[in-house]
Each structure stands twice: as structure tokens, then as C-alpha cells.
Image (cartoon, rainbow, N blue to C red; front, side, top):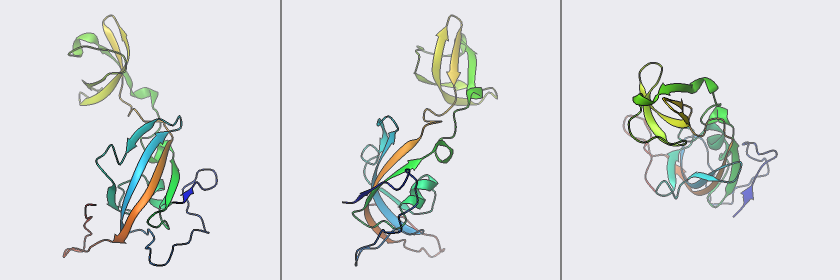
Length: 178
């Protein structure tokens, strides 16, 4: 299995990548079945196809994965692997300190502890998940940023299968399950 990491961890496929005869290369609009592992820059695994129940099956270019991943697998064939760096802009966004809010303790039901994810009304009154950042007597600092906001992610992908997407009567593509 080839493992490739191009240049400074960018997502553009290498010009020297050649597909073996009889193997279909990934292109936009085709069905891709792949395994993946998502790591933080520290190496900690935050997601994987194994954790998610098996290989991912999707139409390349449909937005199922961050754009750098979908662009980065173009040209790969079954058996190929690649590490693709995804910057926060393409994943969970930059960390925004303005998304932290001080909440009165009585507004939070149940036990509170730093790091716990809870549901709490935001400044507009919409109940959303938030992480408890700090606890004081009578007040709690909550953070509405996604836990992976601001993080650079490394997607380790391995292509299992590539095939044309079946076209439905209405002209849309259907993604078969692996």
C-alpha cells in the first residue's frame, strides 16, 4: 500500500501518481469507499471509519468530507493511502472566544464539572450543546465552540473501492452501501 504525504501536507494529488491498469482512479462524481482515521496534530485519534461503523461510502465532491479530503483523494485508486491535512477553515472553523458565555448556576440542571458537555440556552435563548470551561460559586463559564474548533486535522485515508455512481430516474446519484 502506498502512503503519500505531499509537500508540506497539502491536499493536491501528486503529478507522478499513476493508476495501475484495471484500477479506476477517484474522480469527482464517482462512488468512493474508503477507510479513514482523523487525528489531531498531537496524534490523538478523534474519529475513524472503524469508530463510525465501517468504511465510508460517498460520492466524491458531494461535500460528505471536508473539501481538502475530497480534492486530495482525486487520482487515488483502490489500495492507495494518503495523509491529508485539513485546516480549521475547512472543518470546524476557527476558535471564537466570543462564543463563551457566563451562565448563572441555577440555569444548569444536574451535576456540573469542567469539561462536561451540557445543553444550555445561548444568548438568543436557543438550547445548544456547550462545554463547561470553569465553575464558580453561582456562575459557570460555558463554551459554544465545537470541541474541534481551531484544530488542524490529519485525515489518513485508504481507498478500498472506486466505481461510477448509479444514476436514478430523476438524474441524481445514489450512494450504495459498502
